Image (cartoon, rainbow, N blue to C red; front, top):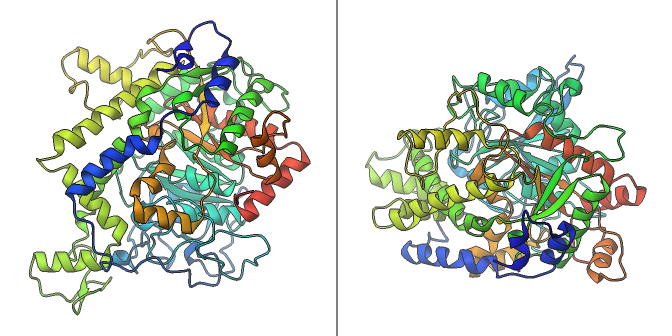
Length: 621
């Protein structure tokens, strides 16, 4: 471990630790991930390129961010806090004629007989649905290129929104919730729903200059959400600012407390245990909120030092070789801004196991996807007409068992989905389970322990697991397990694994600005690792089930000693940065993110830079 990483918890000045560490370039993250991928891909046959249509340019006369839209004029509502809502097309809706297709040919035209719990909850809070947004097929992708309905185009300066501008020179909008991010970015919706499995809400938010929030696992119901990876899938929200998201999650009664409190109408209070077994029970929600209320400091409006009393960690393992110099410069500037806003401590922290998180994530997510997507077999979902076409309404087919299965899945699922299913099926096979799936579970457990070791607050799920293990009732300590049943009374509030560390972590959301589509396609054809590297900073929080939010930050001020900062400033480059909190510390996380964003964009020139960023993306200077 580098010397600067070993200084955690010692008396060396924190600023020296994190600033020196961020300017060093460690080993390549793609080198760490590459070996795992090469072993797996050498054992699984790649799907035929003719198995499903390749991504085609968007055919609709817009940015192709909507798959279906509600006809205008929109329904009237008398709700005092009405807002427009776009919903990712893997979340079921009812009461409109909008299908739920998951961006897949397999579900073309499918209309759900029920509505997702989270959509119903938002309707009750004033949401007016405007449409279903485009996504990578079944949520599998980081650039919104793998939808049956075509890729999502990135808005470009000087191009009217009535014409599509997708080309290989366009910038990526991020994925898989790229359609939701563009809908918010263009003002087509006030709030958008997405799903975040390994960064699918936060990455598009970072590329588009908007806010993307992934709550604690188990906070928002997943009933009505088409599953990709059950232990990772989380419903997330996107907006142009933090305030709309905070009001929906925490509620309107901001003065109820600084910790986990909030208004009675906040979504954090709503359990759905009857329909979603991963939803945290209400008694546990209330107890955890009461524990966190008033703990530490929290932001308050009108305060010049809104972060007073808080401590922040800079995870130096995230300073990978692939990190763009402009983002590294902005990271240094963002860390310095924390002190300017009153943070008591900004210190380096060590998260050694996170360097393996991306490899573990892609093994676990693919394994769960292989199981979840087995239902798309032409009998329960999908169908066959003739020899190759999928009939979304069923019917047809010769009923010849595996022939029907092969035909339907070969025609109805795209190449990226097929590739991940093959990877997951192999990882679960008897020949590979011990070497890949179980090893990935052990890595996941260690990622959770790394996070728990640096946060001041204890992880109630982790403490519960350890109590079970000490009584002989728990699983193998290397197996990852989240028990979302009602947690026992008397769980410690403070972290018992050492001296107090930090309240939140600050890191980039993505290692690079939005890449050009041509570069993504070229990299994907030569090595899948190059395309998956975008999730390297978002996957760890997903593995641990922690809340995380991506917010845009202004370009750093020009510095005579840093040409990188000057370059970022000249391009109006507003990178997305991620704040990560301890489990169920969502209320404080949202308030801190709101305070940081408000303080960051007080200057008119910074507001102009953000507007330019949303309009043009993050083109190279």
